[in-house]
Amino acid sequence: METKLQSQGTLQSRGEPWSEQLAQEIIAEHKALDGATLPILHALQEAFGYVPEAAIPLVAQALNLSRAEVHGVATFYHDFRRQPAGKHVLKLCGAEACQAMGADHLAECAEKKLGVKVGETTGDGQVTLEHIYCLGLCAVAPSGMIDGRIVGRLDEARLDAMQMCIRDSYCLGLCAVAPSGMIDGRIVGRLDEARLDAMLAEART
Image (cartoon, rainbow, N blue to C red; front, side, top):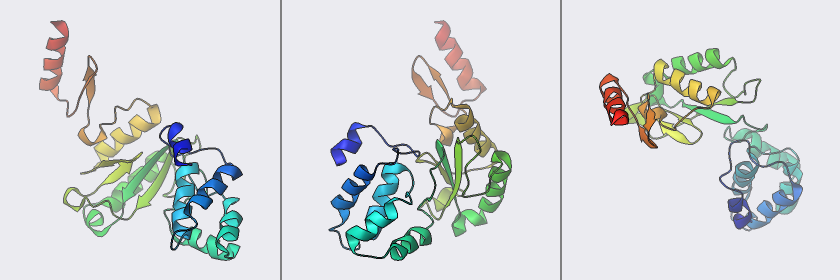
């Protein structure tokens, strides 16, 4: 099953379309593990982008548990999604260090700009806004994550840049060192006027 998933490339937040056969393969691969419920749910979310409701009875049957028990685990942990995520997933850290550095205000700004609450997806299916408890970046708080890429020292300007990139689909993946650009295929971060002048001079030679 691992080879099958890898052959399809890196799984994005949307994941694969629901397939009972793929779900059964995932469950069979993990059911012998101690405390298999969590590993199975994580693997299902990695494959499909969320934990499909149709997978709950399959997990319950394989592990000899009730549907209520599996449903209870899936709903207790906030990391498990019950609906498909958007094309992009923006996660904002809500741990104490980030809160002390203004994370709550950033979350409010993100909600206002995207027009959704934390835990929701924009109407066009482009962006899902989520909380994450701790990214281990207390020294550069507040921090966040966009499509798996970690960004520290978040402020409103950097949050705006991240949202612009993901909504307009022209991101170089350098949100952490924005603004960024590219010259002859070479990516350049932390652009300023001096660096831009150097790039333009190089382009003219």
